[in-house]
Amino acid sequence: MSLAAAQLDWDDLKILLAVSRSGSLNAAAVQLGIDQATVSRRLAALEAALGAILFIRGRAGLSPTSAGDAAIERAIEIEARANRLAEEVGNANQEASGLVRIVGNAWTMTRLAACVLPGLLARHPKLAIRTIGGPLPRNLAAGEAALGLWFEVPPGDTAFAIKLGEVPYAIYGPAGADHATLGWVSFWDDLAPRRAPARWIEKTRKPSDTLRLTATDSSVLLAGIRGGVGKGLLPMCLAEGEPGLARVTEGPPDLVRTLHVHAHPDTIQSARIQAVLTCLHENFSSAFTPAAPAKRPQ
Image (cartoon, rainbow, N blue to C red; front, side):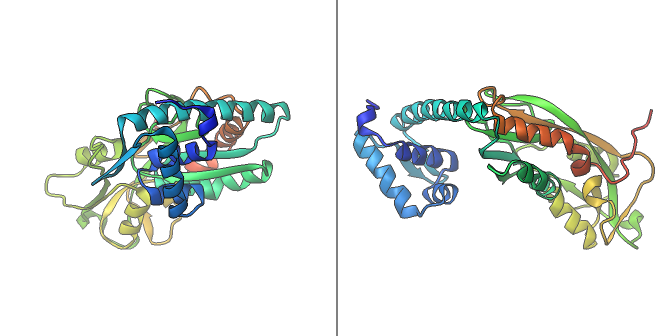
């Protein structure tokens, strides 16, 4: 397969990468801000230029063929070079600009939107942020200006992790309820059953205690607790002062988790990634600890 520059349009390669990362034409269209018909037409034009079928449709969505894998690999290289060129020009002006994707649990993205992003975007008016929430990390592609925020998850082969700080958790129940008689709610993900909150609940609850609700995100658990479903472990930055909730335990946090930011070595020194990292470090406490942070036992 020849990727002759004269036959290819960089915009078509962007569509190739968007489809490969999202797994569907519709999701790629949303990601790129265009309609699905345009994505389909441009992908067909790229396949015609290359003389190969790049994707096949299956139950899980679109999957790349062997030719597609080869095209995606080369497109990622081209994307990385284009990004490096843009970063070098941008760094010459010492101004952070462009899009940065931030991937993490949905509740952590909500905290960023409330406590970190307003100041970041006010400080850097040419910067744009796209948050992507989900229970499990995705690999950070080479040349992609992206960061991942994860607890106790090792970085992928193409990334490394930097410690941001410690996030305290405590047990909460619905205000005014007899917490001793309540069942439990707990974090759970079928693809990652041994995450720290799930292990802590399993060690803490008695065999006779019922597990009433499980969810992949703490904001869902918070809503269930406030509604009276049960008691459970929540990030204190979410739960402290929340109407309808009461802390079950007193004193130091019941669990402390370390939050890491995952980054790709190709983009870590770029102006836009450095701007986001600086803001994350500066605002970590306001975003991820309660107003009066509880101290860990000595």
